[in-house]
Length: 350
Ligand code: SF4
Image (tube, rainbow, N blue to C red; front, side, top):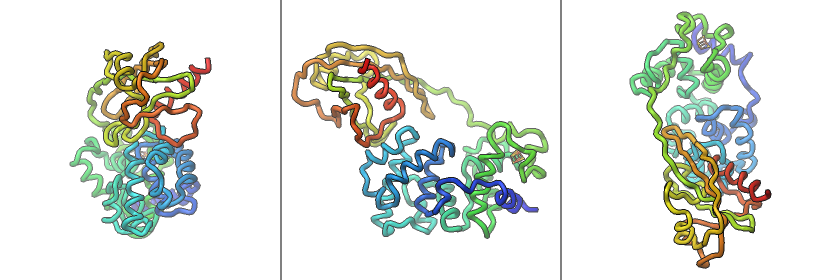
């Protein structure tokens, strides 16, 4: 039996068919799920997906929302450029595609945040179009089945994998096949301990035959991650408020709200006086919190600052505001900032 038939037969019996985005599937629902599933496991995505869909049920609702609201519903999922691109793409669909998800591959590929594999997956799953996909799961299955040496991020290896993905994508049943091979990678051909004994591909899989499942795909060549340091000021008052500021659109945590930052070694009271217009009553330094990005570690030193009397009526702008920690405002915070906010609220109650 050929490769795709084996996978399709397995999928009919064992594939996942109860995921939220598989219910009343539409291109919009498939698209949001595919973007959330990039870099993130299904179990983590499901509650985020359900909340996101509850708040932004269609393209028009997403396009109408403020970026703050969109980031609020993404807070904690990470890789926030995904949310900003989703929002921008929804606005483009309203403007250029009559608030509908486009059906042409070129139009989909032209949208922000959608690459070749995601475009193929959405069009296959939502419209049954024939397109190969090559997400992390598919890369793992094909790398093992053919014992392909080399990190899949290398262009030579990637080219080979795309050729194989194309070769095996059937003309018919593209939607089922796309879901099936993603499921097989996620549930059987897992990163560690793949379930080869029940895998429909086990007879032809070179990695299994040679007992080399752990060798494929080879990991990204290791690079030493540099450590960056920052000091976050949790400038607070006796009204349960804390100063937050909006980060620039580009760069880490772009568009999210965070605490003002100073370089390690900068004087806290000087910053408070010159930039925020406050004298300092008291400060308390908390232990360093490490947050790891794909390319570096960020060591955050949180310093709680109890504000004294205002020296001027307004802060120096820069998108800063006093945020009430009991407020229900829909703002997006990066995960470590959200955690520090929670700790600060508890600390103030003591
Ligand atoms: S036989 Fe094992 S290694 Fe090969 S595709 Fe199946 S689960 Fe993956």
